[in-house]
Image (cartoon, rainbow, N blue to C red; front, side):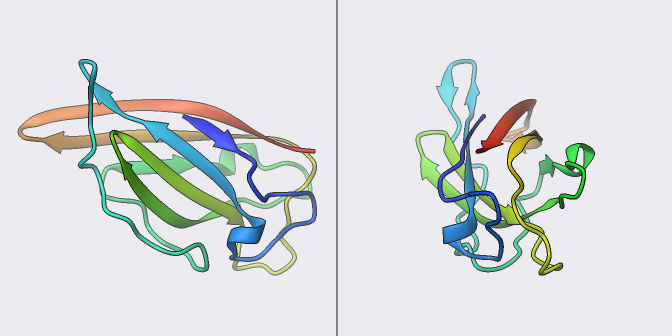
Length: 128
């Protein structure tokens, strides 16, 4: 899992691609790409849920004066690559990106053809 700051800058907010960061995840099983763990959802402008078996955690590392995030888009790029678009929490208009480091965790536990696939990762987002 890697996080690209993309359009996220200190002071940025709102449910828009212009205020978002993008998390990319590569999933494999025994070296083979796993590309059937969810369909595209959202367009970056409102809250969405991740596919069943995907859990995203950010609230454990909220910076002082900061807010948690909202997931606004899930993209299955194919070839085992998935993107998750995030913005500052949209249910509070005062929430903005702050300068500094944010750490996020992703955990996946799904059944594929009778086999349980599970794993997790941590990644850091840095806002200058």
